[in-house]
Amino acid sequence: HPVVAIIGRPNVGKSTLVNRIIGRREAVVEDVPGVTRDRVAYDAEWSGRPFTLVDTGGWEVDAQGIHLRVAEQAEVAIELADAVLFVVDATVGATDTDEAVVKLLRRSKKPVVLLANKVDDQRTELEAASLWSFGLGQPWPVSALHGRGTGDALDALLEVLPRESAVPGAYQRGGPRRVALVGRPNVGKSSLLNKLAGEERVVVDNVAGTTRDPVDEYIELGGKTWRFVDTAGIRRRVHMTRGADFYASLRTQTAIEKAEVAVVLIDSEDNIAEADVRVVQQVVDAGRSLVLAFNKWDLLDEERRHYLEREIERDLAFVAWAPRANISALTGRHVERLVPAIEVALDSWDQRVPTGRLNAFLGEVVAGHPHPVRGGKQPRILFATQASTRPPRFVIFASGFIEHGYRRFLERRLREQFGFEGTPIEVSVRVRE
Ligand code: GDP
Image 1 (tube, protein in one colour):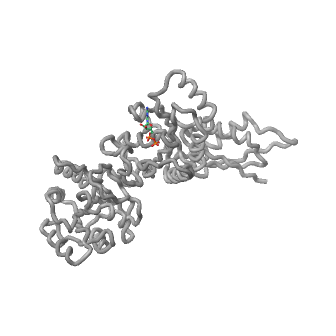
Image 2 (cartoon, helix red, strand yellow):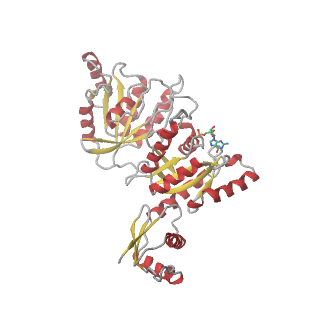
Image 3 (tube, helix red, strand yellow):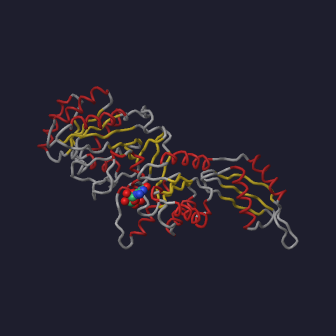
């Protein structure tokens, strides 16, 4: 999809516009300048045409160097876009900062739609007209708050927006793969997200209410762009009041369902809790691929490490197939191992075993270990096929009832033979009389 960057000074009403355009209330609007945050990308659509709307985030407003920061932020955003929505506050008029951005826009030669926002009445409409002086063409008078004029402005955007994106890398076509970071509160999800996204550009949770509500974040790792889904729940700290558990688990469920791979964080320093196992089970039940990240590894001593291994064997044996990384979101230890682990898990999730190979293999297994005889009868395995990928699902046709234990045995052998590291697999049996 083509990429549209929305740029403008803080407080010109960008977030309100984003909400208008994506038709949701998720980008929380705030009037506090000085909030730094990352680029946030939203799926948007107008008149049936999809595009990616990238909100470039605020820039720090300090007395010195403001122009520089604005220029840097805007420059990157413009570079990574196919078209730009440039938002100006009509009630304020053109500022020096705006002029600096105008220069960048002219040089970039990207299509620009100039929005004069906060035009709530006739008088400001005249103010808006003065923005012709930018030389960026017609200023579109809009009121993001009331929705006035935004439709016309978006129509104008579609006229200049290419159908396909020419932006390399950052928001590649075909879609970046979707990753969920999940785990119980305080395991270090937001610390890890910040580590991955690049420390400086992301607000940590210490100032209540300063982070906005990005839905998904696009982060470049190992030369690829990844889509971290539902990061709002990670960025926005939820206080543990009554009922919060329920909502936390609901949010976890949503994130898992939106993702293709889930990285479950577990606090290595703490005992593995039922809540940890439950999150892992949610991933398996949803049929998503899985990576286990044991965080806070920097805090472990020898004794705890040994004990933890025993706990893992006891509580997480059912996902012994999941790749594992022992990390520290704090120090960055082994965080770089997450990407290869995620790639392995996704490859397995996508894997398809050709029917010929599958049946040749099953034939051998069954010949070596036939199904036990019950009541004088022995069910035969007739044929098997992989019904789907993502996750791999197998259907085995048999001449009679296949015991649970034997089905598990076949599942284990399938794993041994074909790998499937990092993905749950499903084996079901159909009985043909
Ligand atoms: P979340 O609730 O899962 O998002 O957890 P946070 O990222 O907010 O982390 C909870 C606490 O654990 C914070 O005080 C972090 O500083 C701390 N923390 C996170 N990761 C690590 C780590 O790898 N090592 C250590 N020592 N502390 C960590």
